[in-house]
Image (cartoon, rainbow, N blue to C red; front, side):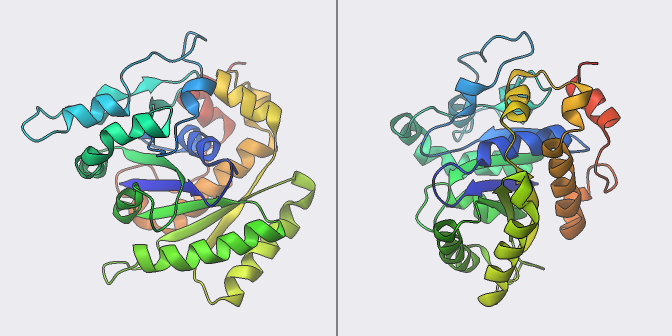
Length: 277
C-alpha cells in the first residue's frame, strides 16, 4: 500500500513529514524518496552509526533491479536504516541524476505497490505534469503539505483541483487527497481553519489531517537519530502521531496489514526507533 507525500511549492516539509510518518507508523513501513527535483534526506539523515548514509543502495539500485527479466528482490533489500529507526530508500540527489531512472518509474511503482509493507513515498513537488504522478495515481492517498499564507493557499487551491481530476476515478471509494498544514505552533489552529475554509469554498472533499508545527530542534533530532523520550513527547511528534491516526481512520484500507488504528505513545516509538532515554 502506497501513501504519497508531496508539496505544492517551495519546501514546506514533505521529506520531513514522510520521515515523521515513518517513525510514528504502527506497523511495517518503508520510506522511499522519489523526488524528481532531487532528494534531500541523503544530505540530512544519519545512519544508525551516526555517520552519513551510504552511497548505495538507492532508488537507482531498485530501478535497475526492476527491469524486465531481472530477479525481483524485497523492497527492504534497498533500504538503509536511518538513525531514527526508519527503513529508508534514498533518492537521487539532483534532477539530472533522476532522469536516468525516469523510464523505469512504472516498474518501480509496481514494486512499491506490491510490497507487503506500508510504503510512504516522498514525491517532492507534485503537479499534474510531474514525472512521478504515476506513483500518486497508485497511492491509496496523496498527502499535500502546505503553508497557510495567502500565496500558499492560492497555489493549494489550484493544485487540489488539478490533482483531484488526475487522481480521481470510479475505483476510488473516497477522495484520494489530504492536506497537512505546516505552521508556527502559535498559529496552528488558525492555520488549519484557513485551509479548511479554503477547501470548503471550492467544494473540495479533501481532508485536512492536521497541523505539523515548525520545530527546528525536533527536526534536527529526527534527522540525527537523537530522538529522546522528551523529544518524542514534543508538539512535533505529537502532531505527527495525530496525523497518522487520522490518516488511518479516514482510509481504513491502510490498516489491513498493520496494527489497529492508534496514535502510538512514546513507548511505542521507543521500540520502533530506539529512542534514547
